[in-house]
Image (cartoon, rainbow, N blue to C red; front, top):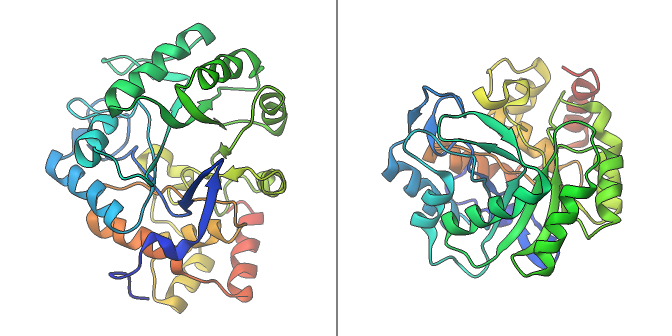
Length: 301
């Protein structure tokens, strides 16, 4: 499969509320540093390279970028790189950010209380140079009630600071609790081949409710912030060989085949990886391919 002319449009489209996007997007978590995200000793990525990757992503038709104010290294902030690379922003570009977790300059983590969420929203607005945020995901920790925090964001939506709301790292019960407060356009949870097969029904339910499901770590899997381990199962490698693509492209294509509401937000600071990730949106897996990969997935491998 050639990739140099394939754009994100090949992945199809979905609407986050009234915002139409291509299903292959870009995740900014890996942009501020090389190596493991959030590692205190991670080397800051070359600024010009990061800016070039963002601009190339847009050239390739990516119009959905996922970011957060807590995506930063010692010298780089993902939000500020996005601002520098892409402002003034294209009319069709949708920037999704998330609030809840926070890192101080030393890298220490804490989780915002409801009354602190406005400050996090304003921080994202300032860094991105926007007067409103397209989509804000409330990222949760554990099974606690979502009501107070999501209610605080719903008030900011009513005030015009946020256009649409989503949730991240949630259970079906938390999603239902959020939807009773305000519309939810997306769910962002960890998911991929062999990762959380118990989420399969939740993924389907989101589609039935018209809610986008946005897997994170779809390539990295259990490698999470450190990235993919390279230890792909025989099934993934067999499908990759059959199509002449990489294992990472197979993993992305498989997630997109889970339903028309499933989006992808692979992140990279490497221009070649970016091109390959976008090209994965054009990879069409056969029924035999899917049966092979689904079996691997159900085994949690």
